Image (cartoon, rainbow, N blue to C red; front, side):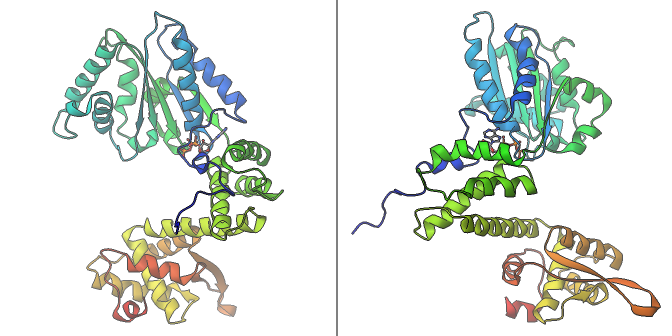
Length: 402
Ligand SMILES: Nc1ncnc2c1ncn2[C@@H]1O[C@H](COP(=O)(O)OP(=O)(O)OP(=O)(O)O)[C@@H](O)[C@H]1O
């Protein structure tokens, strides 16, 4: 008996709906592509590259457009014998200082057997090693820093690197930095000298609208799905839901992919609009669950305290009822409790994340106003998250209910 057989319905090539799939063409980004191409023109002319800063919310094509255009640039430049172009990508997630970026860049450039240690060098020494590496490669070197905002305030490298040649640290290399960020605050907070250097060319990516997302999805679905695998309104629905929410192509693609998976699980040959709605609910839930897991320690304590009351059917609850529970759990967990007002801020955060529902109430004639909180998500999800928490000692009664 055969246990596995290949899909013959719904997905023809599901990898095309995945996050890391690089599309062969870019839809709906004509203006950004044009500005980006212009900003890269000095590279084609063999001149010193401009520094480019791309910013825009998550999922709006900053990475996809960069990969597409830099691939094109590398291909097209092969025609010119006098230009040597190298492109290096560095994802700066968790690299919170210039030092860490420099070390990781050296290790990205070097062979695996020649990696340097991530600690223990003076910063200038790491910069010197980096400059040596860049000069050894020579020619035009584009350094793409994705999620550049992770570097925070320690951003000296963003000032030093682009100027290394004019400061005589480099002889044969012409470096250019391309920074990518979805954190608008980072751009605004850059020190003036870094801003002037890094943001020589700025390209803003705005959220996609419904028709743009529909075009992107259709293009992807043509390859990823079998013909007639979607009911007529499915792709416009995924596009409209994502456009109303975030304007992110990633969200639209995830919706279609998850809707397809639901149809496959149900052994259906066609994705329906109901699948899309269910997929949206599932994705929202998992996003909220992720938000719950990522809370700070006091956020977790506030969550546990409210859950304790909810399981006793004592919600909606006021802060004055939640706070004593919070204190008890903090004490048991040997964590210094916050004052009530600060703990209340955490409850407000939980409401903002869509975990709690917050209602404002009036105290009748006496005129006071207060808030009541209750869970707006399925308690089972909260219980699952709470059961996995580390560092929080749960009350016995609550433990028995998990
Ligand atoms: N214009 C487009 N045409 C085709 N596919 C696109 C387009 N824009 C985005 N995508 C696809 O959407 C997904 C998310 O895009 P991408 O990773 O480029 O977003 P981003 O702006 O870099 O997001 P983040 O800031 O979260 O890294 C990718 O799978 C990408 O291929």
